[in-house]
Length: 171
Image: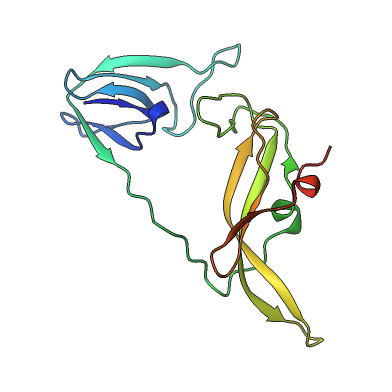
């Protein structure tokens, strides 16, 4: 079976002979045992050459693919602290570094924007007796200038809505 990270395959590639995980695999053929992966030091972040390009390597092994299991929905705890306003209501411009790449499929530009998505939770009653809106940070995304997407707010009923794009992306 041919697996390709760019076509949406998500999981862990494992060498059956050694039991070692092959981190950041881009492509694999479990029938022939061939694979292509990104070179890493810590198994998490890809190494880059002097020009900033990721270093790829290929290999052959007795491969097994373990598909990732993701939770269907995220249920925040009601006692979660409020989300910082600067992360929820607008995109935050960040310094582009190799640590954060754009999350758009197939784009490997360094991210210029950090966007927080919020889940609105039950309002809190302040000392003055007024009710205050609260939310928890559920996701944090990184985008380059070309693929920027506005933050999303999910109401207590589960309705998703984009935050006003005019306010979200400072010009």
